[in-house]
Image (tube, rainbow, N blue to C red; front, side):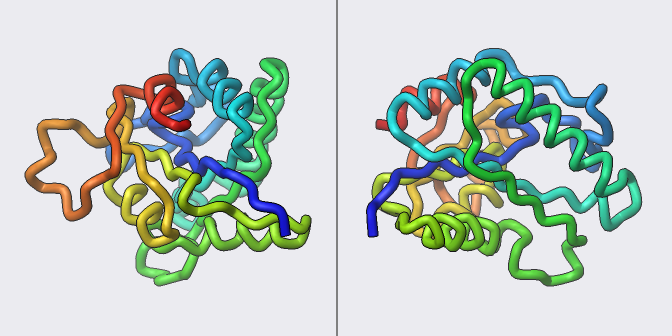
Length: 186
């Protein structure tokens, strides 16, 4: 089985603007790429990484927006990235509420495992020690650690450096945003 390097990215606060605590990106009109996102993803692809989006989207099960709205946001996001020659290998969402106690909701690593299983079907195995999880919350960092990945916490979304004393888990690296994180990834 061939080994591949992968980067797993949270969506809101990493790829697009963080909507705010307890708020959701409910439509394509609410989705705004963060500056430099397309170039950063292109850089990661150029370094030979397979890119996956891993995101909790409980707003669907809470009835804030529909699965169809989420699918439309995803199609439009992928279409825009495609215009910049960025290929995303997969997008995986957990649409469950926290109290559903599913295996796919971050900080559990079920969505990472789903992506890894899909790659195995293609005859590929993720090289964990050379792969990363990039997110804007400590929950993302916990997910990456649980999956055996290196982690990068970006400060372009929810988490802020001044909260470091309250972090339950420390990231391997921190970065201002996805552009800076892409420079850390070797």
